Amino acid sequence: MEISEASRRILASLLEARTGQQLATNRRWRIETALAAIMRARGFASIDQLVARLVSRADSSLGDEVIDALLNNETYFFRDRLPFDLLLGGPLRRLERARAATRKLSIWCAGCSTGQEAYSLAMSFAEEQARWRGWTIEIVATDLSKNAIERARAGVYSQFEVQRGLPVMQMIRWFEELGGGDWGIARQLRDMVRFEARNIIEPPPAPGRYDIILCRNVLLYFAPDMRRLAFNRLAEACQPDGALMLGAGETVIGQTDRFVSDAECRGLYHPAPARAQQSRVA
Ligand SMILES: C[S@@+](CC[C@H](N)C(=O)[O-])C[C@H]1O[C@@H](n2cnc3c(N)ncnc32)[C@H](O)[C@@H]1O
Image 1: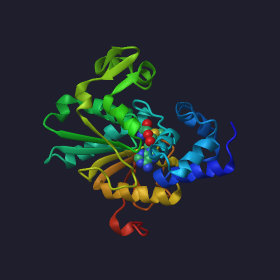
Image 2: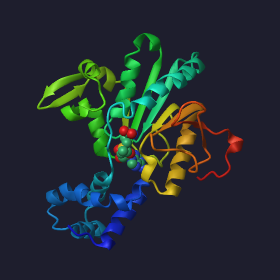
Image 3: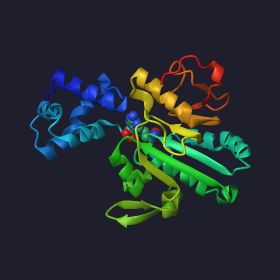
């Protein structure tokens, strides 16, 4: 289906204004696929018709639905397993020693999609019960997409989703078959994660300061100024001795001076010492 250049531009600027994400030229084909369900459900004959309705502001929920549909929610359990192993190895041991007095760790998954990343962390802590006995492990997971957050809270995954990235032993241990091909995550893990619908460019969720922040595969398509703003938010939310983990193909180098690379662990970053930061934005 043909989409006019004007409609493409309107969708792209709506997406960027609301989420920070740019609609990359090579992702334009996604518009049709992403909006197909909305078009069917609402009886639009073309995307141009949908965009005209959007612009008329006659339908307040349409904008939210369109944004939600255009977001890329791709995720799976223990995505790129190596970073999880690294994070839960050395860096976590350092934080464990540093927090020995309070016995509390706060973790934020920013851009958590349907919850697999946060539940992967919860599983890792739950599987080391003896080590973390007496500790409070607070995991807060946020995403702009309300649909994704609802799914994450429900903790119900299809057979395909539950098998993706998860070894059979963990699947059997932490999931219950619900019938109809669905698998429900154990209540113990659900109780370990607090999910909230939230935009990353807004102030961080309570308690506001985190020992570990995961923001993986979220900022990849952000416009540069929005990405800088997002990094500022993440830096403000990260404890001075805390750590930020980005996705496998992401880096802070050339993007922000608020974080510096970990000397040993690729993909892991720490807040830059205050005097090293030169250009702060709001
Ligand atoms: C590709 S998924 C990555 C999920 C998970 N972090 C992972 O690596 O598997 C990116 C997620 O970021 C979310 N997202 C995009 N822009 C956002 C924003 N401005 N604020 C919060 N979440 C956002 C999307 O809704 C999507 O669920």
